[in-house]
Image 1 (cartoon, rainbow, N blue to C red):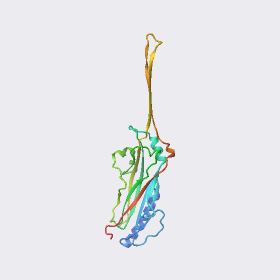
Image 2: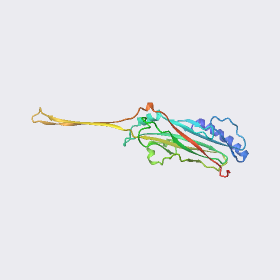
Image 3: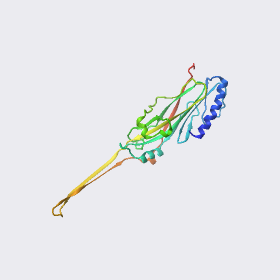
Image 4: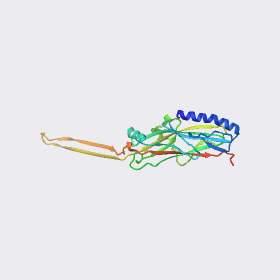
Length: 241
């Protein structure tokens, strides 16, 4: 989480504790994002929703707003530079965080989606494609972990903060995006042998075998950006009519 996010969330929690304490509960919702300047008053619940990737935060500014980030040239270059594994697969791991804030009995879930890659791009190559799975720490977001995790299946909602708690509540979910592709290959081989007729007696010349294989991969420097979109799903209080 960035320093900027910690300051924003910390300040909101202090204000929320005062507002909720005065109102004794809330039926209205005021969405607090990075551009909000509305003061908190009694009988208002406050929600917050943001995603952070590479220390860059995108925070929602309304209850209907999505947040997100992109993967593109940098991630495609890292995938190609990592080289193939024993199965000829190329992969890259991208960690990101989802931060939630709720109060006054409101809950929040969310969904995750990623754009479909264009043909003739690195991420558009055949293969497993993108997989999302939660991790306990961003440092544990690795390519090797992908095979042992149960991936998130869109558009199913991810359980976030459950409804029913009046006090301001924050939560940070750590996620890992692994994109795996299997590029097509081009291979050729040649073999030559013969007999040395100048020797007496004639002798066979050992054959030579030459083979090579190349992966056909688009230029990662020209990779277009793919958008990852995270959509909040509000959960009303249990006693809401």
